[in-house]
Length: 220
Image 1 (cartoon, rainbow, N blue to C red):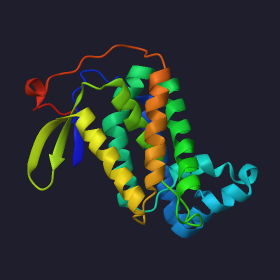
Image 2: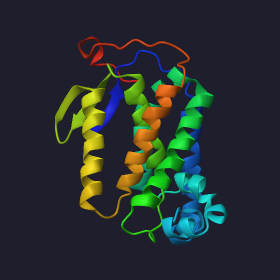
Image 3: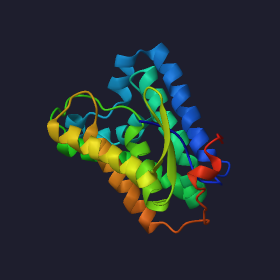
Image 4: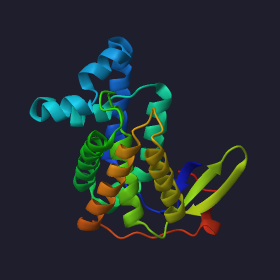
């Protein structure tokens, strides 16, 4: 299920969301020159190395959020951020939103370090931090809808609680099954962190949900 947009009328300029997208894109451009293996070794989060030397490896909690493994990995993460990030940034304000993003990403890395079955594999990507954004979105906009593409040819509005609840359930199932190749525990750690932080943060502004039957044809 691919999210297309949400049903919020107002998002605001979302400067932090746009800056993160731009920064991740620039880092990926430089990765093409550095080489992926070298960039993973320098900037990726390696759970075993962190547990052995937390202070010396702490910078990787942040740097790993901006390094990606492929163009598809980058585009998938940034699309989710573009769909769910602007509304949450408008709701919380840019600085609190940035704090939620960064803290969620670090909590995601720590969750992966504690629970991963293979602590020597580098973790890269913004998905832990973006999972925090989706968790914050779910906590902040429980009555919103998500316009969703169900491959190959179905389009429909789904409640955000259903869409993101299903997504979180899939992450949990895959984590428990030990499915390789994806940092499932990082996704779950970031998601929970984002929900908790959004609960603590005071919203900057109110919002209105647009019923899906009013604007199904509208794309921002």
